[in-house]
Length: 408
Image (tube, rainbow, N blue to C red):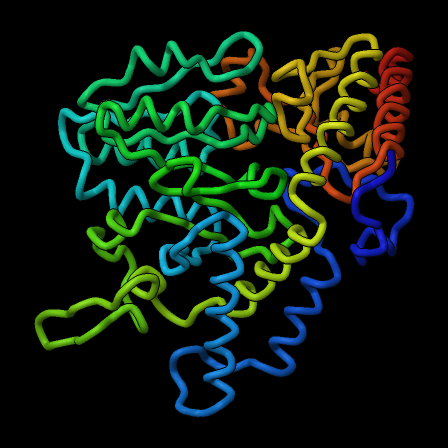
């Protein structure tokens, strides 16, 4: 087994052959085609979209909307105008909480999140519940790191107005049965918002087939630029939502006392659009499409299986999340002896191995795991068995250092 995509596609990796980047869940490295798309836009097409009656502005506008179409197709959205560009998953969740939640969640209602949600979702809807005087309910986990569907079923009733669920856990890698969850939530009349930040770079996603009402993800986790993301929503819901930010381009007619607002998608994209990064995101989608999302998934399952087997061969390791690579993305979180994950990550860095250490913006989950933090290794299309070998070698070195007492 080798990498699916050559390191030569990624300038940062090509320039540092000794680097083993196993932190793709935090942010992905950028392929050359994305960097080229950004440079081309600023070199040849840069103008303010929607604002100029000249050819250059028209070209910038066209490229911005072409990018929207590309991203919509990548996630299976048939109505591109329901694919809104935002800054990232966090902003997408806040848009739902303010623009939909404020109008639809009130005192006596309930909002349901899961114990594996990361803070962009957990805190956002926790605060919505507090503002509205609603009850916050939390779906618990099974011992193997899956969502407890009986916990979900027991908490669903007519009071629940919104269910927030991650497609894939950022800390455990667990792939959740979203269609099943949607069916259960819709049966009681609840709207479902799905956090796809850890799913879109790794799985073939079809938002229409999933049945969700809202779906959010960040561009930088699939090789696109930072500062761009997407909220997809059902047209019937989006059209009933009031804008949550105000400014240029999202208006229709501004009177002295009142204002009417533009059609989708503009009413939720106030101000000068982030055109260059939208075009960069579209280039990332094209890159993954060319690789083939089925091949991306197969590569990650094989590599994750290799990583799980290798780590299980180490004494003193505790791995969190599903036991089977088929049940998770390319994320493996673990604790290693009594070594704090921050110390461990520092030692791994000396071997050129990059992993994430911390609570992964998922403190409620860490409490349930009984740890303050974990180390997390995550693979993507450029990862190879050599990266896993380097990780294991570095962990063995860490064991020696701490066994000798040199770092205690």
